[in-house]
Amino acid sequence: MSRIIPTVALTLIGLLGRLSAQASPTNLSDAEVAHVAVTANTIDIELAKVATARAKAETIRKFATTMVTDHSAVNAQAAALAARLGVVPKDNAVSQGLNKGAEAARATIETLRGEAFDRAYIDREVGYHQAVLDALDGLLIPTTEHPELKKLLTDVRPAIAAHLAHAKSLQKSLAGR
Image 1 (cartoon, rainbow, N blue to C red):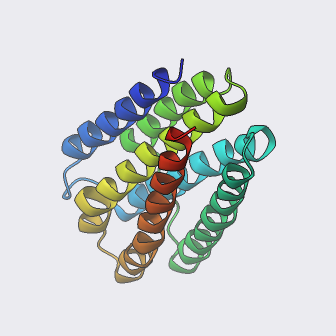
Image 2: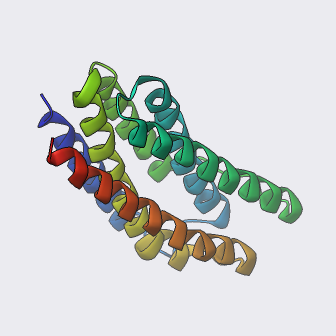
């Protein structure tokens, strides 16, 4: 059963890659980039809330709590910046694809319990954070025109990389069980 989740994570990574390739840096507006960023954070917040309630291992619950806190803070920064700039985030194919992938991942993960849930959640977090880093580097940062929005995305990148490293560390510790 735990082999299903890496497939879901790989599917999500592939989806982000395809969407990034379809949406070239010249055809995503700043409003669309802002929507993608908020969508990506919200997706991780929602699944992390499930993990804080359902994870068996305390280390997984703590990681999930960190995801809720950190991604909520980024969304608050993004909302404040958008309001200050008068930018209304605009839905787009990348955001829609993220939501579809998240629904599929969540449907699969929510059926699991105990250690199987912990492994599936962390496998998904590894894949998701890698996909978000790839999207930041290959689509979102290069696409963004407004310097303050670009700075926010650039400033958030190290935290996403740290989340990925932490998730990989947890993934290794779970593999040993």
